[in-house]
Length: 226
Image 1 (tube, helix red, strand yellow):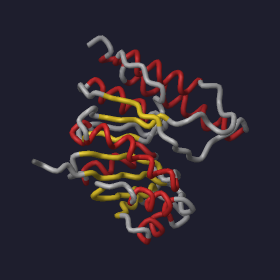
Image 2 (cartoon, rainbow, N blue to C red; image 1 turned 90 degrees about the horizontal axis):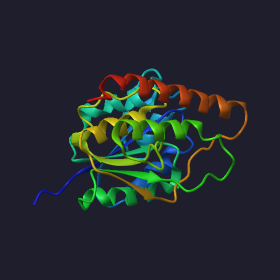
Image 3 (cartoon, helix red, strand yellow; image 1 turned 30 degrees about the vertical axis):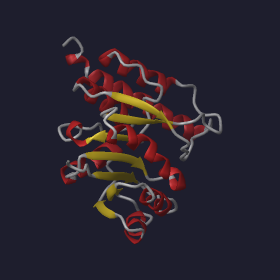
Image 4 (cartoon, rainbow, N blue to C red; image 1 turned 60 degrees about the vertical axis):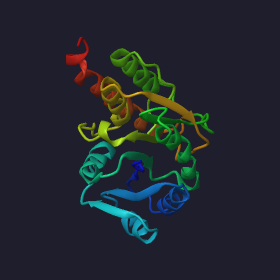
């Protein structure tokens, strides 16, 4: 029987203070064959820290955004299953074992991490609500965490995708994979990452998220009736 191989792809931009902890936590997960960090034009030595922690590093000369950074890694995938993680998870990245299990067991084709409630007040839910609406509009599937970047998926669903460049990458990925016949589950995890609060930059971040998700929805309107 073929033993399925797993690659963990970690997109990181200026995460030198957390990337080693994230990598070390992923190493604790049984069955991970490769850890590939995509250093998205970091200027703080993220790539060097990741290499010292034992990860393979794909270095990008300029910052091109998470979706396009991940796109650069797709041709390097030879494994059966891809585990996508953010670079700022730190020690809690070991919780990713929970989203890997449904894929290895055959329960699902993609599993998405369902985070606990944020520890501090964030936005007003517009970006998440729009993402949830967009996924339901195009696929009929209702998701609790449409924006979660922590997900495990069979690589065959990823290799033909053209990922979005901005903050809408997860929504676009979910829509396109679901339309490809992928069975998706959401899995509760005890993960945390950097949170944005209700300050100026927090609202700027969420505003960009909202606009990027609108672009994802608009680009998929031509096939909405198919």
